[in-house]
Length: 466
Image (cartoon, rainbow, N blue to C red; front, side, top):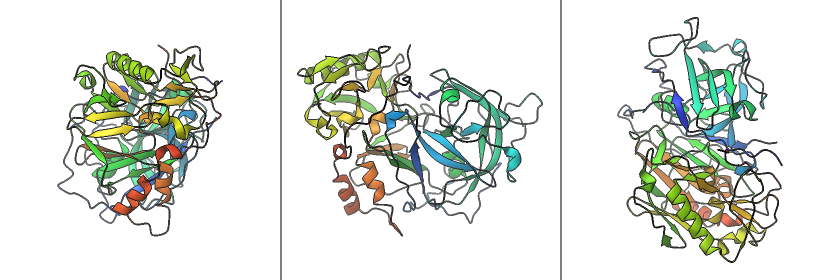
């Protein structure tokens, strides 16, 4: 079995760069959202104070491109999207990460970078590449010529290098024309960033170097993006940079940009089988609060919340046999006897509800807190673990088959349960229009648990060992 690993990409150290007004927006650029395909790979900075969007609120227009995706979130622990950099364009597979604020790829002269999916970026081969020259707002290289960056992550990986500016392209199916943007050209990688197959990171967090912030500052998209991950055993999904029309029954909760650079939500309670966990009301509000991080595979609760959740699930599944996990290095909590048909999991495992600050309820299905055992047929393990930190961290597993809209303009995050693969198929036709209420209802009528057809025959990634 392949080594179990988890991409945990919450930033614990950063070097900030003030881009100022270095890059002017092109008034002729189309201010439209774009859809980037999310590809599953095969076998951050200091507090960012929110700035006004220049008094403008762009009209949200329809998505205009989409590519079907395959495989499953847990096969390698992350989704990637394709991004092209330079002229002529050089392609890279980048992990989509809402917990990072810099986009970076290996540089051609990197002496401490791993072997990744695509060739390294070659600045000399791009006619549009420019180094970001050393200035008072950045840290500089040893020669004092070029700005540098450094990012260190909670699972002990790191990336450092120089900052460059070039044209980034989003693929032939994107309505957004190529844009100039600042990105990192890596000189050193360590940990998972060195060993992973993906080339690098696409940072979508709050920060001046974030792809989102740069595109919004240029005025080419509205200040919102959405992610939609496919379900267990199916995968698929898409990412939209820019606004989309929200489904009428999407559940929104406030997200405070001043609290931390991460995308937090106001989680107040968790219910299992309709019963609230008996917890201190502030348990989900400690430190950074409850954080969504697309670069993390599983979910991590503070100790008291984890124990209460685990006990509640075990109580509701007392008729199932507990078995050891697939990897002896971890004390996974696993259950056998549920059957291989994942469409029937909701008949065996309880519904879990997240209750937000104003009483809004968002319901999770079993695929949002379980992963399939790779050695015992019909067995599943909890994909929620105890966090060594008081922050509640919600990774990709919790939002599978869920359209998640990060509405940064209005400081809110929305959740809508759907079949992500089927949802984006409905947008993949000529002259696609923004989904109407009927379209949403039609897509929403596809039960999320119906999508999978059996279990993937793959080894699953795991959490980091202590």
